[in-house]
Length: 435
Ligand code: SF4
Ligand code: SF4
Ligand code: SF4
Image 1 (cartoon, rainbow, N blue to C red):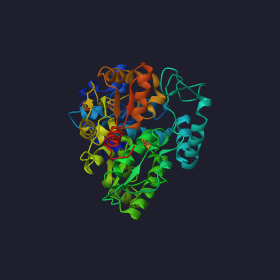
Image 2: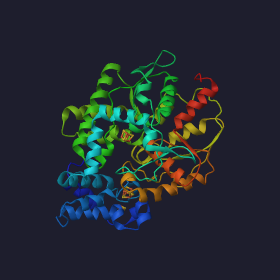
Image 3: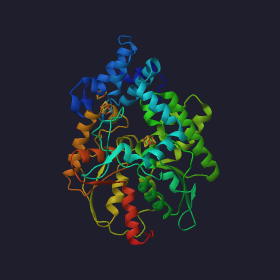
Image 4: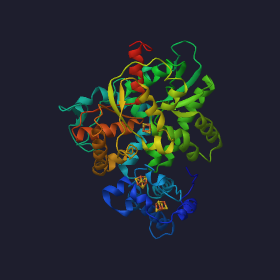
């Protein structure tokens, strides 16, 4: 990730682009739109026009930069090593500062910042979800009963958890052996907290079975990625500062070896974004740098602590895996989830076509551009279906939600799980964890 403070500073990166068009061949949005404005090269051209004053800042220009999944496929295929996504994020932030984000985004992000209200609202909402959402006859998930601003009526939404993940644990959850050798703090992220509480339980139990004391800081909040990726750096910085304070306090109290996540985007926030967001605040920069060194995705952590050395019970499934863009291309975590699943007896692992191609979700992109997002997700669903898998796995809860919607829209009845949840099943079947 390049350390850019202004779009002007991105000039050097912009000048590296030799306009070869290699990014076009891999951009999921270009494949759907055949529109140069969708691809990195087109956005770099736009950034030049903004810098040279040929384009005046406006919501229309901001919208053009919003047309990007931040999937980094372009960067991976760029012969000049251009940090295309950094340029795009910088342009979004600078334009948002000048013209403000659209009203709906401003309202959502302001609400997201209010941690207690946000959590309370979603708890109440979970208990009354049947009022606003109806269960689907054809399978899991719900659809909306009436229109809500910013949500497409066709979208299939998973059930909200009535018990949030973070409420399922104490702050300090000792290793099962009582002799913890490693101390790791869990940043759950919002989607895992609000929806996939079974995944969080599986992850915490697998780690505790491997002599890990798991700390779950209660005051943690959304990492802020949806906010700062959309260009609102002020609220993004507030959220980053909050999480840094909470996890620094946990580090001081427990002397942590790791801070871990089960969300590709959350890992990137702690490992990369926070140091850039807070580069000019020495106190928070020091916290961000210290925690970034301890940050890891849960898949490599499970392997590091010996999770595959335990007796493994049979789990009979044909399984495929979708690589989250942020986990795969930013954090380079691709081998470990596969290693975990392939180690479990009874699992037949089948690679899907284009496993590392974006699912189309990209956080709020699927809310603001549902039709375009759905076109991409439909291809992912078809790639999953054609493997013959009985389960689809991914290391990112955001991708999981998108894939569940895509499978439902295509009428494909395949469940989704996190890879470590399969190891949990395996441990239960071998008796490592009492079921
Ligand atoms: S692949 Fe890289 S150098 Fe080529 S057009 Fe795209 S951004 Fe520019
Ligand atoms: S990040 Fe992804 S969607 Fe955005 S320009 Fe690059 S390839 Fe296209
Ligand atoms: S990246 Fe997504 S899941 Fe992770 S904390 Fe932020 S919103 Fe929540």
